[in-house]
Every structure is written in C-alpha cells, then in structure tokens.
Image 1 (tube, helix red, strand yellow):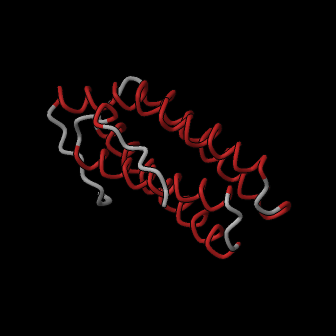
Image 2 (cartoon, helix red, strand yellow):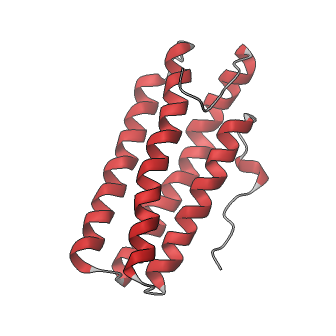
Length: 143
C-alpha cells in the first residue's frame, strides 16, 4: 500500500488546493511504490498518465487564480510548475525507454515527491496566505 505523504502542516488553508495536493501526493506515492516494486507497466503507465493530466489541472487551478488576483509571485510560481512538468515528462520518457529501474524509483522520490513537498511548504504556503488574506474563493472549475 502506498504511504500517505500528506501531513496537516502541508495545508495551505485553501480547501480546493489542499484536496488537489492530497490527490497528487497519493498518486506520486503510488507511482513510487509501483516502480520500486516493478509492478506491471500498465499500472505505471496509467499512473503516469493520470499524473500528467492532473498536474496540468492542479497547476491550472492555481495559475488561473493567481492571474485573476494579481499575485505578485506569479512568474516565479509558474516557472516552478513548468520545471515540475518537464521533470515528470522526462521521468515518463525514462520509464518508456528503460522500464521500472531502481534509478527511476530514486528519481521519482527525489525529483518529484521531495520537490513537490518542498514546493508546498515554501511556495504554495505563501500563495495560500495571499488567497486567504485577499478572501479569494478558489474553485477548481474553469472560469
């Protein structure tokens, strides 16, 4: 069973964003476990595909509300999102080329999970504070 990476201190105080973070962390944990245990490629490909789509959805939610509310850190925040998407794509390509390797499992833990946890603690915490202070009603639906 995938380990639960969510801790209450990761909360940014915005329900929609917290729920999306929980989903991403759950699926990242699932991916890490699937690769390290060399589960079937179908499951791994399915999780990678889900993550790619959900990352776009989640980052889109944050970015849409950042631009709508003139968030001062938008450019840096968006650049961090793009970095994560490039890393996820690179690791997906690595899986397609080499399969479930120990190196890939390590990279998922280091480059995806640890990066995402750090991003939540440092970058998204500031965004959550900004949204709360401005009274922004964050929704996941497209506007």
